[in-house]
Image (cartoon, rainbow over all chains, first blue to last red):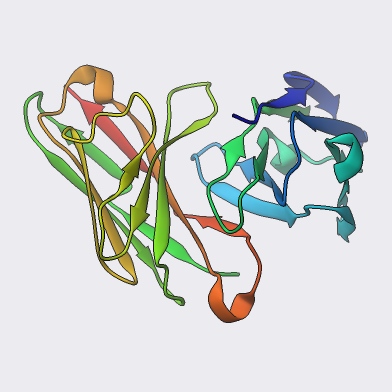
Length: 109
Length: 118
């Protein structure tokens, strides 16, 4: 099955810093989503981005499907950005997602 | 965005008992829902695909007799952990595509249910 690797596994930032999270996947995909899992476990949808670039406030994401990677950019990080960021991909229509290994982010004041 | 709701959020039970978790799509119909499990500090792993009106499809290594899934309506899927044991303690989370008129493959997740088996 499709493999999804995220890097870095852990990231510590000072409040106000910028960061880039990467997601590599092993095969063609027709669905790619980025999620933020908060300390209570809830998954927050950040981007639905099987290809192209999107921006939402301080966050933006780019997926280069032909090269099998996606990037999540966080600018001017805040302590509330702390948590785990997951990339998840799907390769068959409106079907299941395979989750990546996650990046654990800690933003300190 | 589409809303998926789970209940209960937390459940503690004794070893050997059964626990039912509900997953509802609140503002859309979902012919397919997905159940994931997450152990501490790990990623989410798909357990099974719940299909409205038919049998669930289980991932390799997931015991279908232990994790009973029922998808009796277009807005409700249930996961029952039967004869729960401490090793079943985990975070269970369901998801669904809004699909239909929304037209995209975006998956939405419930709040999750944290199960602790004593």
